[in-house]
Length: 437
Image 1: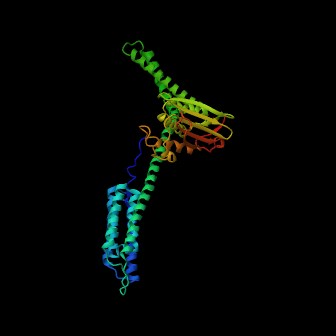
Image 2: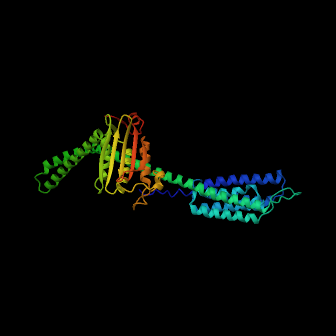
Image 3: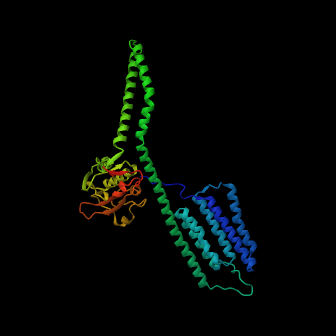
């Protein structure tokens, strides 16, 4: 399946930046007023408010220039965050540099970038903030303090602050970026799952559409057939029209036969295919993968009690079919599908004689965009197939277990298990109603 890439996933909402900047403007203003007029420390108030005003004017310009739903391109958002980091660095320069306890706020633009921008922009912004922090160690005005006593910070202490700020930037940026990237991948993969499920549901609905079309077209087609017969009686001996009229009547009869066939197929599907015994479900899942050079062996094992019967469920059929397809992709000669049921459980096991799952991905199988066996075989895919299959089957109440078999001729083994109670309980499985035959 193709990678569903959302072009908006790396675009930051302008309104988010504007609100964060207003919060920064308010906090910076209160801090300057508190230090200058409450604590009465010497402070370049006018210069500080000039810098704060630049942020406020930028916010006003962006508010009136763009709509609240506008999304910034990654480079534009990067430039805006560089401005925020530079403005804060200017304020810190006038208020003690890294000796100012608010120096830790330098990490905020980097964190915002890590949540929404590509990694290269976050790295560039982190480098810029790190450079600004380094300059603030050596170039700064004194920290505001009482006039009668000077507050001297030894360079070893300032160096410690620099190390803490830079290490916090690196650690926080990497951690936040990883979390945000995994969230984006999961969101895209879930969107892919929903698209697949909708497609399967649409295919299942075609029978109903065929029946509706046959019903709606039946009346006008019957009228056409009657008119064609009357025309044949009237013009049948006229050599100019006889051949055309005969063709019109024969084609109208053919259309009626096609509609009858569609109607019979639809009703037959509704009556006989809406509910599937477990063996029929397995046959339907495996049938599309038989003619590709890989033998598919069906092996029922422990069968205790009556056979479960499941209502047709597009998600379950697609999920099991995806597991079988994945097995045939990596099998050397054969894929084995085993199933069993008893009074407590219903289980399906899919085994192949391929290379199996690599040890390094065993604990991550089923996560989106983890290609489970791409390192062993070409064309391993993006890993979305197993994620979708796992999601759809777990949504039906199943539990999945991925393993490598200990048997010499068997590679990967995937077991899908439902409890018998979950099968028989009404409404326990969304769209899947299973009972004893």
